[in-house]
Length: 575
Image 1 (cartoon, rainbow, N blue to C red):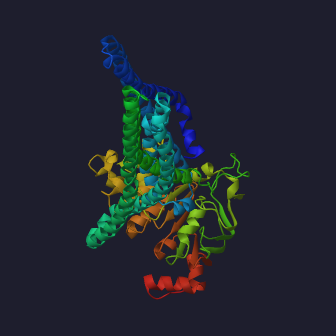
Image 2 (image 1 turned 30 degrees about the vertical axis):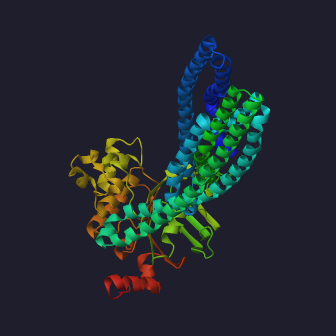
Image 3 (image 1 turned 45 degrees about the horizontal axis):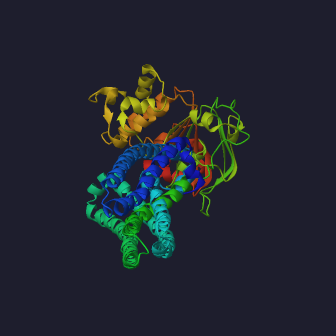
């Protein structure tokens, strides 16, 4: 794991120190017991001295109780550290994700971020727990057992001294290979989560088009790929144990054979042979769980890299040096000066050399075909993206001179797809302004033409909404989203085709109510009836501003606007 990930363990240094100390107590008991057993055999049983047997037997029992108590307490501190570490990492990941720009989300999709915050963090938690419980104890037990075996009888222990370094080198190679395999597993898990997320989000459309079989096939493919990669990784790791056990059992057989020869010739005592065999058996048992440890560590390393990728992602939208806290949006005047924009890692420009001026309090409609850059233009105003070329000014100030917090607080943004959150209607409205009064909330709902609908719900404003407002119609969700924006009393209101599901009468009432707000309103719409009520119309075509003016002006001068008008109303009648 990197130093950045390890840094999350700093608050838990005391708990880790206690856990490791208790682990060393367990280790010491485990290493000393074979010596005591040797004394019981050589000085007690073989000589018929029961006092020696009882003395060392009692010591072994007492130390076993100490080891048990140490193990239980160690588990408590290990769990405290690993759970606290996981909590802190998830908090940091979530905080970092909140600072991401739209460009960052394009690089790291939500399905992958969910996997990193859940599965990857859990892998790290498990590894931290294991490192405090058995992961560090295992290699120390191997090293300690080898040293103790040499202390008991150097000649008999030479077999272990030869075999163990070879096994260590083999394990290091396995660790490197395992990390690569489990990195691929985590990527396949991302894909499975992505398919599931898309499927659950669009379940109604899937049923409407009877595409369930197709989606099952798509999920089966992603799931099969994950299974194959996981099985391949686990099979590779599972090969370790039989190989290690084979080598260690051969080593034990050699110790027993040479030990029997030395006992017969007086070169070793029976207790010494038993002690060394016990140490070799302990080493063998430790090596038998190394496949599990290495599997966990390999997955943790792959997960650590993925978590660190999120934490190291550069925040490309932040307050610059020119941003001043005192600069706030007061009137809502907007000016685009030669603005061009292209999405990161793409060649073509989505918007090119856009220039226009919107006076404070004006209502502006933005029209254009699908893909003409309307929504992109909207996203530049609250700095969800930064312009590639040119400059945007708000109230005569460059947009970068206003802090992101001040800028976005002054904007009410209603996206093309109405997004509601799990919770009550009230909670969704107050999401726009946390401490709004009851009167402010109801006024916003009435102006958005949704108050009467809310009153007819089972619990009124306290009615629970399903995920994404699943129990509301499209028009109801749009109006609730607009009410959430109006409750802010914004200086700039951005409506991204968010009246598309409303009938003409409801839309007219809504737009009339919005005029009572002291704000600049920009509406993306496909309806000429809406644009006719606007002070200015911006007409986009393939990312270029082809016309800018009132309805009457564009009807006279813009062939494209004339075609749009004719498609909705029939013959064009020039004023």
